Image (cartoon, rainbow, N blue to C red; front, top):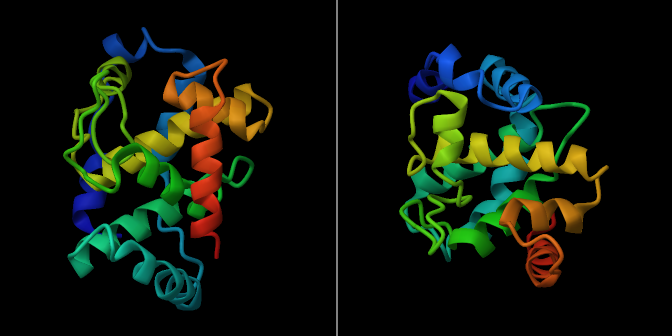
Length: 184
């Protein structure tokens, strides 16, 4: 694992801020921080990169940035064996949320690739680095996984929660449509 990825894992969790957070979400984040490299062999990585990098090229010009995003998405989506998220769904969500712009800020104040609200790092007592791909994807996947569990793996309802649009189905429908173009 690269040193800059490990640097986020090693940030301390402030017990004062973390105690104000839902205990289940705090536990999820602690598991994420403790995680390790996710590709089981070089062929997993090669297949993932060869199938996804050409699609990502229309959004992200730099090869190194594409590789970083693809590595993070794959690893974070598969981090929890009981709550895996299809990595190509995460790519679809990122496309809808930010069109892969790490500097994107929504009208509601959500930041980065997965449009994570800035209160999450504060609530969890971690450093706010939401414009960086690794922490943004890590936190976005942890939040989505949390909502998937609450919604009993009901993808549209979990996506609506993620987007803050519970009761409306236009956002989940759009992400699910984009997912079709990312499937591998």
